[in-house]
Amino acid sequence: MVIPAYAGALNAERRRDVALITGASTGIGLDFARLMAPDFDLVITARNQSRLDQIANELQSAHGGRVHAIAADLARPEAPEQLAAEISHRGLSVDVLINNAGFGAYGLFQEIAAKTELEMIQVNISALTHLTGLFVAGMVDRKRGRIMNVASTAGFQPGPLMAVYYATKAYVISFSEALANELKPSGITVTCLCPGATATEFAARADMEKSRLFKWNKMRSEDVARTGLKGMLKGQTLVIPGLKNWVMAESVRFGPRKLVTAIARSVQERVE
Image (cartoon, rainbow, N blue to C red; front, side, top):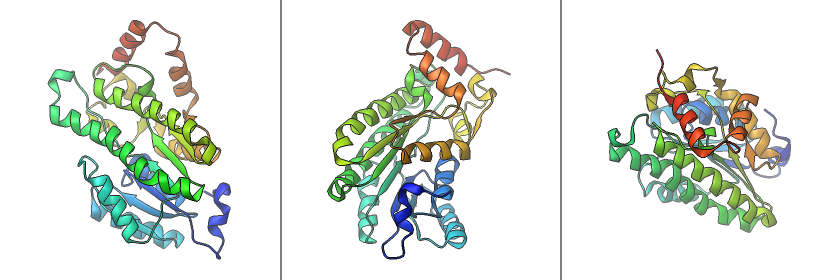
């Protein structure tokens, strides 16, 4: 995938721009890495170092750029600062930050372990916010940079049976839109990518493969990642891949809140 807005990164007289991608070992994050590897040096992070090393070797062999594989468990509060310190230690500055890491859990709130819900908040909200804070100052100083936060169409309404997950994604949308406004004078763009149901490992990890939402047609993760990157390079603040997802996200703005919540629950419920 040629990235025209960063054509200068291919100029032999200057370094390639560096993109940090969290949650890069599977799904949308891995597709971001594969799409960006021809034009960027990458820092890829997730929990599994051996898997990251395998991906780094694959991408370096195919495209010749540098791919730094740094394992980090973003459920640990100290992980963002440790990751930033390691990136700095390697002499890198981050030009593009893609906050993709996140997970969900399915079930009634009182039946999900508090540890799981709190780790979800840590990964989906706290780590995303922390990493943005750690890297945005350098972007502002350099007067260039892009941030993409991966949210979900779940963030546009309450979500019974995944109450905390939906709430975390609502935060990501609100935070991204506000930050995009704040950073506009500096030339830094902030894009919030809001996929709907996508064919990744997310549904299995969240135990929601039998929900109505994931029984419907799912988008390919590569298509979601490609749409997100195109939107980011255009400087779009909100990107919703797929017409069906866009219609669903927009329609909830006009419905009575109780009805919207009831419909969201119906969509979440399991079917055989």
